[in-house]
Length: 96
Image (cartoon, rainbow, N blue to C red; front, side, top):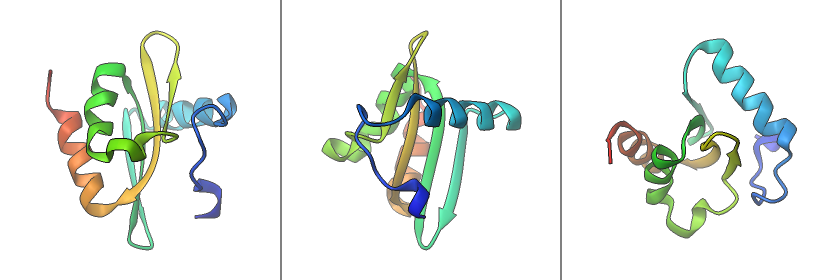
């Protein structure tokens, strides 16, 4: 998981965010869940309201795990425990 280390939002290269968006669009999904070594990687390209709900379970640890994109969209690239991933996905399914 070396390539998926946490970086702050201002350090996250736009290229990485763009690559995540392209991979998700190629799969025709807004959210991907990758499980590796007991951790979950959530990558998502969602509207900002949905991103806020998904990131809420992380509290202050959400800092550096998302990147704002044009048109009110957000890329999430978070490495979390499996239980946090479940909470994030459940929160992402709800509407405000």
